[in-house]
Length: 158
Image 1 (tube, rainbow, N blue to C red):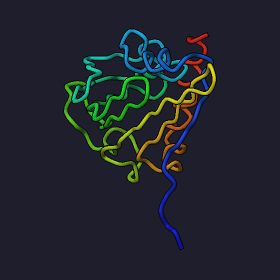
Image 2 (cartoon, rainbow, N blue to C red):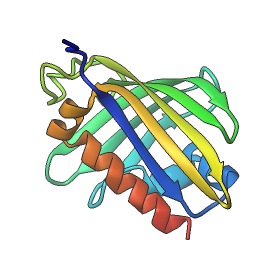
Image 3 (cartoon, rainbow, N blue to C red):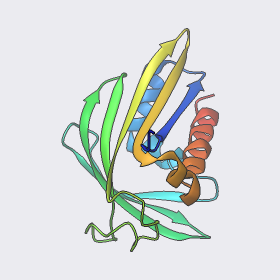
Image 4 (tube, one colour):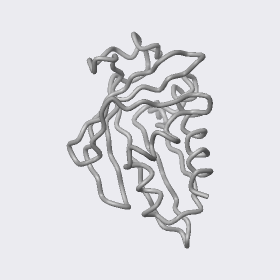
């Protein structure tokens, strides 16, 4: 019996060229307009979208409070692929346990997010894979947040 949990995987089709969609994922000025679920905002204390570069951000949620995250860009292939780590942190940039940050015990202390960009005619298919179980992502609201953020990005790209 296979007891491995299915990891989070989401695809979304954007009505925009691949270069434009990739730019929306790597330009801090664009990220701050869509990289937070509806009703929330995002603040970047720092962001360096180059290979080996780091980010430190906070999603401000009026209902659930602040969610600080930091990470490192492991791989960047322009217009094709982004790979970055995500670790829960505090405002000072110190790592905190997932449980301390309000996640469940099954939430990983660090996760890797891989985003690929594929041209489909004049559109772009974005695929997101995260090293967290899809079940946990749905329980914590992370899955739903991705869907909302991708929908926001789709509206911005029109």
